[in-house]
Amino acid sequence: MKNICIYICLLFFALEQPLSSKTNYLYHPAPIADFHFDSFCLGDTTYFINTTQGGVYFTWNIFTVDSNNVNIDTIYTSSDYNAIFVFPTSGTYKVELIADNGHIVSIEKIIYVNSSTTANFDYQQCGGQFNNLSVCYTSSYWDFGDGQTSVDGSPQHFYNTIGVYTVTLIAKNNSESDTLKTPLNVLIANSLDGTFSMKVFRDSVLYYINDTLAYVPSDSILVYFQTNDSVSGTMTQYHWSFGDETVADLFGYNGGRKVYHRYANRDTIYTVFLLVRTLCLTAFSTQNLTFYDHPIGNQNSETIIYPNPATEDQLHVSTNKFDELTDVIVLNYLSQPVVDYNVSKSTTGFDLDITNLSAGLYFIRIVFGNEIITKKIIRE
Image (tube, rainbow, N blue to C red; front, side, top):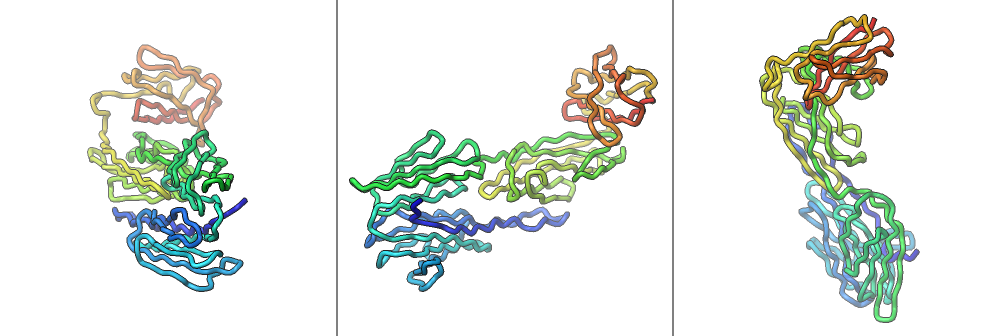
């Protein structure tokens, strides 16, 4: 494979240490440095185009290098936003761009300067930007490996799904042409939702958090939050602000997508805030949450399970909210779901066939829309 430019990209994504429990601000992220340049041949003026996201101050350096790409001499330096330079001779050069916004990030690209048409490119994951790094070409043709093509010089192209795609670039200069075909590993999602859903546990409940069994007393209010995005990777940050002066900064696919939080006060409006940040994107949303001793709009609703302890094969659940029922889950004493039971409607609620349940302690989790009621039962 021919490589006009072999680049070393040093990106430091500034995901700071978790915030204290009383802090409600976020530090700014590091810049995402990148650049590309227009077509040129030896003796032409080369225009380096700055495509950095989030930078404030910039420094350009161009070095001559040895056979191991180690710097020899600095032949150009500038603090301009873009750079302009004429390479004096054929050979290998290193171009460095340093971006600074309080965080300092640099990117380096190795350039082989000559007078022959040679195809090459790099790909900026953030923004789906293909940078055409070919030299001595007047037109180009792209095949992105997903059925889409382009004749733009440095096109922007988004993939529907992450994965490995074989990208083909053909650089042409009159009758001369060069073709580069290379696999491209697409790692970054191009969309971010930032919204979340939640379920409220109003009664005593056993649950798993970080693979540890925990118990929440009946006088507390446990809420389960889950993000609606499916983004993954250790560079994904989830910042939760629960509205009661506590926050949590968590990282990774499992570390922050699903969280439990316990509230102490009822009849209080809590504003819950979620910010999701990946290497490229940021999204956020808020929801208000209020707890009452009884559900709004049905102050007299009540759920009763009998007989308990269960001495029969049929368990009766009395509730005037059966039309709102969305799920019934039976858990054993380890909070593990049990599948050997059947649910049927009755005149006062519904019945639970527990014929196949062995003697022991169980929990019945009854879901009415966003409300979850958990009851303890004993099977004799």
